Length: 76
Image (cartoon, rainbow, N blue to C red):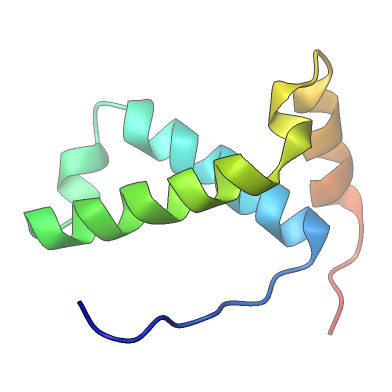
């Protein structure tokens, strides 16, 4: 395994990315968006890292939090 790479995201970006990853992983088209198993593993690992850090994903109003994060303008 090589050196780690840190990726910086805002809280809104992290929440939206987490929701998207879970939606893609659970959907029937997941296999069509990845070319090989290594890509799947990378996406699963990214999802697992986000899940450990995001308390919002365990709240009863997670869908509303994701919608609010999507509605806020991105930080540039």
